[in-house]
Length: 118
Image (tube, rainbow, N blue to C red; front, side, top):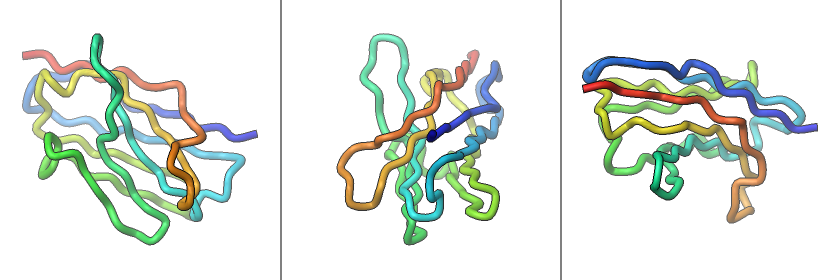
């Protein structure tokens, strides 16, 4: 049974930092693409950052230079370091996994709330 469990969300003032963590089990972690998505109220879910099994990373333009995704294959963990947070970063953040040859993320965590106050 695949499980992705996020942690690390919370309330932070604008300009602050948070580090999200995602613990994965039940999958061959190192062979999967890991992504962080977010969904704000009234908005579509968007892919914020991804870390491929080959070691490359990609970010949505709005977080480039502020967020960093990393993974520890030995611990089956993926992280999202978020710096210089803005109120528009407020959302529920989800960890997700997919096979490299899949178009869609097949496995999802339950989400963790990030709220940035101005």
